[in-house]
Amino acid sequence: MPPETATPAAPTDAPTPDTAPAPDTAPTPDTEAARAGVSIKRTADALENSPMKGVRVLTQREVRKQHAGVLFIAIFPFVGVLAAAALAWGHGLGWSDLAVFAIMYTIPILGITVGFHRMLTHASFDTKPWVRNTWAVFGSLAIEGDPITWVADHRRHHAHSDKEGDPHSPHLHHDDDDDHTLTGTLKGLYHAHFGWLFKKEGSDVERWCPDLLKLPGLVAISSKFYLFTIATFALPALLGFLFTGGSWMGALTGFIWGGPVRVFFAHHVTFSTNSICHFFGKRPYDSGDHSTNNWMLSILSFGESWHNNHHAFPSSAVHGLEKHQIDISAMIIRGMEKLRLVSNVRTPSARAMERKRVADTAPVDPA
Image (cartoon, rainbow, N blue to C red; front, side, top):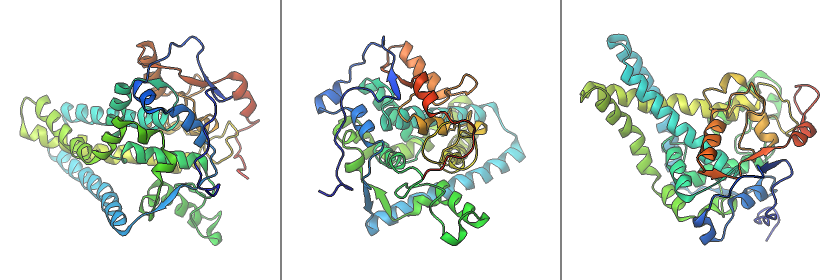
């Protein structure tokens, strides 16, 4: 098997030098993974700098299905924003609408940041199967793809960050003549933010997620992704109906604010991590790529925009490494740790942070 397509051998059970769990953390039994004979942590660590491409060309049917889905999430939420503006102009904005928006924004986004990203992609902590599956359901409500496909794309991104093979780098996808020009910058940002979703290729899940494909719970959740797409629009209507004492107008406005409007804002916050956080911001650590920390997105992204920190220490459960860096996702993980729902929460050592810290915040040359 050629080296560029071979699945890398898993490393030993020892944690990576940069991140390690707290020594006094009691282990959380993962019976499902044990039965399947897999370790998400070992697989995630092995794939972190894998040279393999792991790209699969989509069939025509898959391309049509993909493009239809992308156009849906591009057009329908925007139409919802226009409808919300029209309704708010004529009828005002009720407390129930804000409540539905907040609930439907918070739970799916945390499902992405805590569940899809830090738990499944990087194995930043250990947990029980029911906790893992709950977070996978929450993340599926964000309609950014099923958990296994999402993880495959993100593991490939880290293996080739801002280099050939990265599915959504803003620094690769423009003509050579446009390099370092406004046109080239805009082309790259568009590709990283949204354009990459139209490519006729996908990450090979068998290469990037051999561990997750052996977990029946995650496979079942991924295969029923269409149900979560329906649920993510039905739930806000139900909440709006209940919050307003059975008002059908409350159900309508709840649907609009908690459905398409919420999806519009949540998606663009997530997409901004791919685009803005690889272009604008500070780079306190040598991560070998163009990832940046951007404080302006830190609250809305629940800590994901401390992106240079994350790329320097991918397996860390905490992205906001400094005291002033707000990381809501890390707070949730620490809370689960206190409740004994998770264990082996990995964070970088002070020595590892100093080793990668750069003298200033100038861009790091990925070459």
